[in-house]
Length: 312
Image (spheres, rainbow, N blue to C red):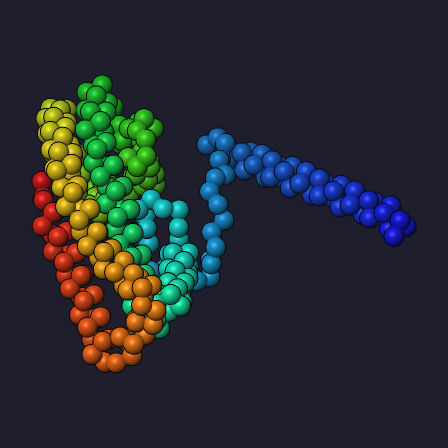
C-alpha cells in the first residue's frame, strides 16, 4: 500500500502540471486570436463577445421554415440571448418534464394537459418578455426624443443623431438604436431601418416617433420643434401609463390567482384522498368534468385579463 503513495502523488502532480499548461495555452491562444483580429480590422479593435450557441444544425433548419422566421423575430424582440433552435429544444424539454411530473404526481390523464400548459406557458413567457422590453423602451422614448432634438438642433444629421443616441442610452433603447445604426451603415434606407424597429417593438408611441422622423427626413421641415412637442407628449403618456398600471395591479394578480386556486384544490384533493384523481379520471364523465373545469378557468383568466387591459 505504501508503494502506491509516491506514484499516486507523482501522477497527481503531473496532471496538475498538464492542467496548468493547458489553461495557459488556451489563454495565450485566445489573446493571439484577439490580436490577429485587431490587426486585420480596419476600424479598430474587435471585441469578441457572446457565447457559443448550441444546436446549430437544428437552428439552421428551423430558420428556413416560416415558423422559425416568426420565432426568430419574436426572440429578437424579447432581447433574450437564445436562438430558435435552442428555444425549441428547451421548450420540448420543458414539455417532457411537466408531462412526466404531472403523470407521476397526479395521474397519467393530466400528462398531456400539462404538456399543453407548458407550450402555452412558453409562448406566454415570450410575449411577457417582449411586452416588458417594449415598456422599458417606451419609458426611454422621452429621453430618446430629447437627445434627437438636441442633436438635430446642433446641426447633426439624423443618422448621426441616432448613432449618438445609441451610445448614450442604456438597453433596450441603446441596443435597438445600435442595430438601426448598423443597418444604416450598410446602406439600408432610414424608412426601412426605422420600420424594422417599429415591427420589433410595436407600440403607439414608437410608431408616432418613427412617423415623425420618417416624414421629417422625406419632406424636411421643423424636426426640432416636432421632437420637442413629442417629448412633452411622451412624458405625459408615460405618467398616465404608470398610474393605470398601478390601479390595475390587483386585477392582474386576481387573473393569475384564480387558476392557481384550482390547481391547488386538485393537489389538496389528491393529498387528502389518495387515489381520488385516479378514480375520477378513470371514467369518461370524470375526464369531461376536468376538461370543462379547465376550460372555464381559462375563460375566466382571459376575461379578467381583457377587462384589465386599457388602451392608452
